[in-house]
Image (cartoon, rainbow, N blue to C red):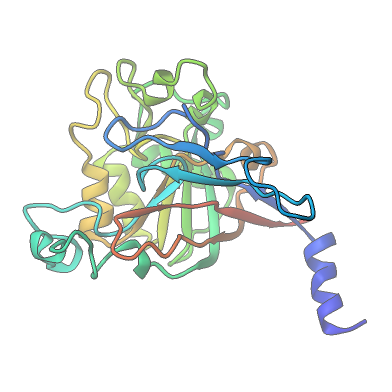
Length: 276
């Protein structure tokens, strides 16, 4: 067996791949702060037919860069006029794009990944209550219950169980405008940052705890992670399959689009889990 065949055999037979990305489709739930996803087909089969009978269809899409499963670049959030590392936010964005800290600066990610399945550890596997703030104690309990160790530069994913609402016919349910959305607050974000992750992610619309009726008025975890610590944030992930499989440790794979100067990018992250 050649080396290539051996490697392909490991990929085919030795691992299971979990798709952590959501389908991009018109009408999906999203933050009201960003342009919605739209898909159109300007050319359909039969609109133009070649001499040999062949035909082709093509599409166009429009969307905000923070819609669907996506990653926040460090240019996304500023605090008191500065981005991560003390970069002047206004100057950095002149010309309508961020040369520094834009999403094009995020290298493809292949790193150790950890799922922190908080609701299962707290005895409510179906999911946390609306607006519940995940505390450092909750995160400590989860690590202990799962019997895992967190290494530096890993990708830490927080399951709240709120992802179960993504496909609700009423897309405002996932937004949690009135109910609130569970997630970490500032203290939980500092707990995560102390473990020096490369990136963090969650199954919610804004990663962090949203209080009932408060919307996106205050996002302290974004400040802590993006501005103070330079940690990327991935939002609107599908983590339930990974949790159901009890897969708490894996290889995390993700590559943002090279959108020059953009503040975020849609992504399709994968968890590669060794069988057995």
